[in-house]
Image 1: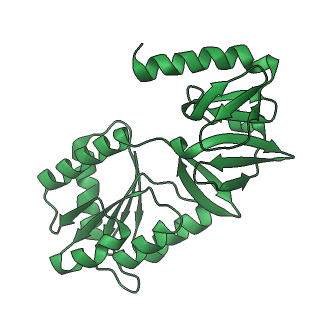
Image 2: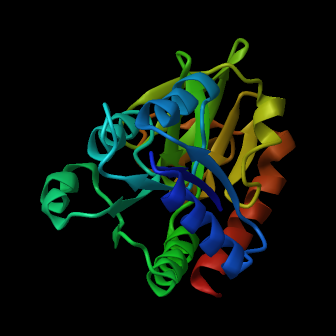
Image 3: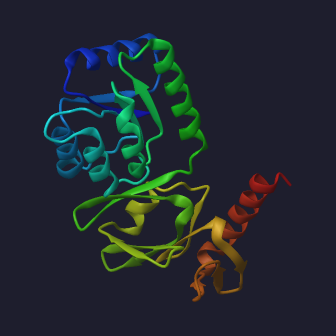
Length: 238
């Protein structure tokens, strides 16, 4: 789990850091930011990738709600936990889809409970695919991807909402990063999501949510058939 802590009061930051230390999590990283501007700069300049953000609602020039709304423009899936001294801000914050609220001063039992709920949510959430498109960081659910298509020195990401995203990556580079149990190469220029396969033919694959068939090479047909069977067995426990 990778977390961002954003608060303009160092005492509250230290408190959260102490609580993280008490939990002794085996796999957790966190970064600290003293303002909403600093956190947004991390997103814009360094393409930040956080699972969750603990965000103070009452900061200086840019408050927590404004910061969260700006984060949502580039990352719709990050989990936002607001930390606040006043309940009056809660209703206004619902537009940026917060996960939980922690009231200041934050007590350890409350933090521990929220952290446990975060872990459960992340375990239950679909995996995401993160990429740069037009120099902007984008994160989409893997379940929303129908297939990848190689085009010159780029990859086209076809999603079930009809959109096509373009990224600078080769097929070889892509195959090193995607989940092999979900995405399988079927042609030198195509890799499909097993979740969306409707039918496997002799020379083509018919996909749900996409009208045109995907070409299927003999080179990859046996592997596709095996992986699709394994996928069905995992899904339906056959």
